[in-house]
Image (cartoon, rainbow, N blue to C red):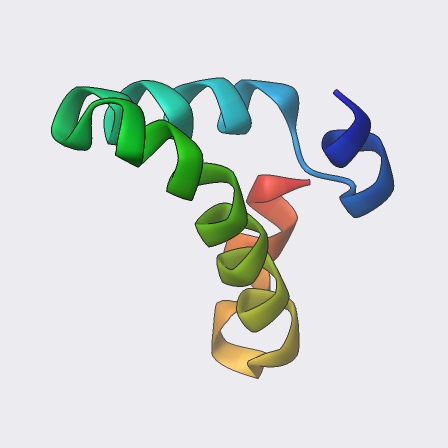
Length: 58
């Protein structure tokens, strides 16, 4: 919740992202999932063609 407020990431997107990566990689996936989502949102907000993905994550 704290990361979602500071980075303006949708809590539902965080939960779904954690479920997918937790299912794929287990505990290691849970530890890596949120930093990957934050990186994805930063890249999506900087690349013009991916702005819609950035808005979807907000």
